[in-house]
Length: 308
Image (tube, rainbow, N blue to C red):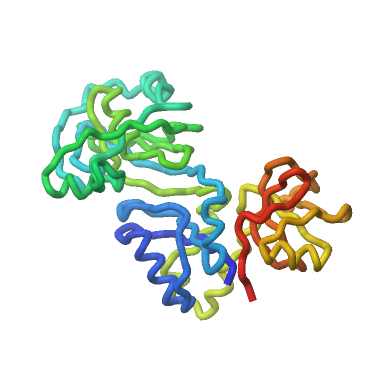
């Protein structure tokens, strides 16, 4: 097995729950997801199956979300699952387009984020959420991240005291949308928490191409939803034309590519030249051999797959 699948994770279950269900569907133990989605969140959850799990670190990790942010209240977990800490009536709050834009612009580009207390970040050898559940406190780490795009796409005032912003967020891996909601609320002077989250993109995996988990579980042909991982990688494919070279590479030896060997983008991009120190996925007769690096014109094995 060497495949990926783009699952639409529903709310209410963990990413590990999805992995467990796929193991039953495909009768396969070796399955891993590309990035955790909290139980509150839904949307795109790409997974790798079999030997493709060894490629997880090489997939593009930028993400896109649609987030609901409720203004005028803060919670212990920074989302709707926590206890309310403070409440402010936002009936007279300036939420004009000009005001919102002046706030959102503060969070575009490279920013510093304080991680949530309820997170899996380790402090003093323990996960923060474990300390929180024990009633303990800790200095919350501050980390750098990147917000590429941040736009307000909706404002719901059905409850004037606690209006809800809808945000479109494209960000780097490691960004906490809960923290972003908190910080936007602080900048507006009213407090806020994340009340909904949908991941719409993960690298080249799109929500429009995802399969609902229930649909997969009820399908009589689950293999039909599997995809070739090479189309989603962050580096090109090099197709070896010499069987001897392929055998050497598969046995962990570096090889000097023949002049007629071709490289092509992982998503059918035009032919490119080998670049020093660049990574490639080496294939032989359409089958992946492993990840290689170009070093002084040689292809040096980085990870070799053992496929039938």
